[in-house]
Length: 419
Image (cartoon, one colour):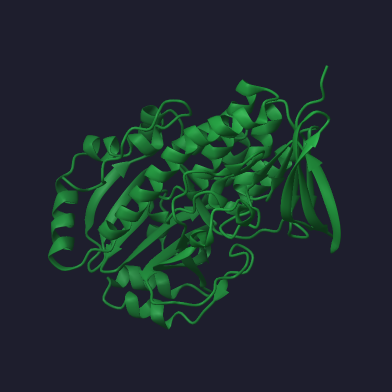
């Protein structure tokens, strides 16, 4: 009997830890390398739509996550200047019945902790912190293709041998840079910045604590907020068009940019009092410049593959960044379950499944950005369409995102709120 394949996963974020669990389920032995000395409580809120929560349920983690999560009853879309409701799309039980799994919101740290605990209780998974993957070389090991990962462990150079390596190391992936995708593959600033904050529930107005996701649409800006942790917190994300041209932090989750919010408040100065009052409660804003990468027709080289933001950073206008990473992980695990010891065949199957899907979501997210930030007559037309759209039409336009399951194919997206 041959030994199980050994996979190295670089990065212990949501995508990397989910990938470790999915690969272990497929029979692989997994070592996760995380460059941070410890996995600390960082980040902010995440929306996990049914295409992601269904995977967590299949992994047996949804019940564990439930005490930390909120299941919004609706998505409420509002006009920035006066707070008027443009549309209300039900979520809750109706969403679960339609898409087969709940739509939930959760703090990134809570999700990461649940994933980490699950990895810790899986004998075939080892998570090593304070280890930074620096590069890789493909080799022949025991008569089959393999990979060597060069790394720094506790500031000492070391090497890890494996059959396959998965780069889940984020936007500025070190391992992606070794795939030979060319100079034009560098991340590109999108022209938009997300300002993120958490407000204690005890300080938030009652309306902001309702179990619903609020989306406010304004000129060249929008705002999303929803409660977290049983309304102990309110998560805010304000996204504006921004001429920022600096460099982002090396790890934007752990070292987000502190910044003076004057530019942010200026962008929202003509919004309704309700929105501005909510923004005024924030004690500390963190500034996330939003980046994209050029689309690539390949995410792998030999036995090394990309996953999550390392493969396909996506703008947050469909709230699918974490969901896509979780989808990637499930697809990767299923590919290895199907192809056994043939790592290259498994990676090829993973690419065939995931590249079209991730590209569709990224393109739709980019288009959604232009819809959210419309100005003048275009914004008036958008608002009129949203006021007329039926609940069934609104939900059907999300079927291709929320109803997606591995192997089901990718239905082409409808542009939300148009026509």
